[in-house]
Amino acid sequence: MIRLIAPFRPLPPESKYHLALESFDWVGALQMLSESAQRACGVPVHVVTDVDTDLPLPMLRYRTSHRRLMLWTLEACLAYLRSEDFDRDTIMLDVDQLIYRDLSPWFTGADLGVLVRPGKMAHNALLNGVQWWAVAGKARLIAFYQHALTLAETLPEASIVWGADTEAVRELIVPIELGTHQRAGLSVAMIQSTDVLTTFTTTHALMLTQGLLLPPAKAVVDFRGMRKSRMKAFYESTLGKELAAVGQ
Image 1: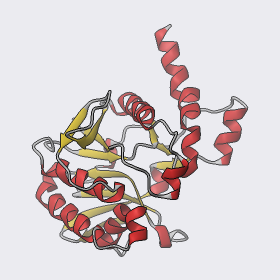
Image 2: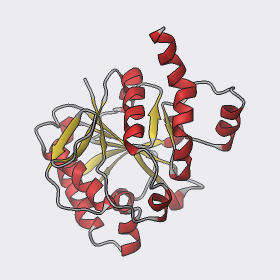
Image 3: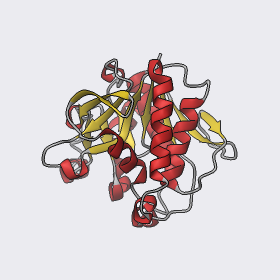
């Protein structure tokens, strides 16, 4: 059976995005993510966090040293990969997402799977919110994430404030091309992002307002940036209604 994880630790906001979202209920988002994942994939989300963090969800705790979000996220992922807990194929998820389809079919035999959008979005081609980690590639994934963390620590201050976790991985896997490729010592499956994920859009917002929203066709809906403010309403209009019907 696969495992789903989401790195999370409450940290002081630095970027303009997080400063604008200081009132956002991150724990509530984690609970919605986990509930959606349980229904879609058959397993809950385990929160990867630090030894001094307590959350009302299944947790995997590791000692970490970084206290800046971008670097901490890479360090927490590395801690999980190094641990005995990484004993099965694992999917890493961002907190601000909901899951509507089983994600396991995108394990392709590669050590690492990532979502990409080459072409028009080549300047921002890596979406870092979903990754597939094959346990068979454990040693290679550890080396890769150690390299990513070391690289991230050297990035400019602006990147460390926002984006270093994605930028470090991107630099290690370029050129970004669909398909499976050897990069930085491991095999990387680069998956067309639109095959798996859709972002909350103004169309979703309109349908939500009109009560016409249906469960999405894509496996993942993400609520990046200020779209997070609509995550709870989207959840309640799709999964929330299903859960209420089950409980009746």
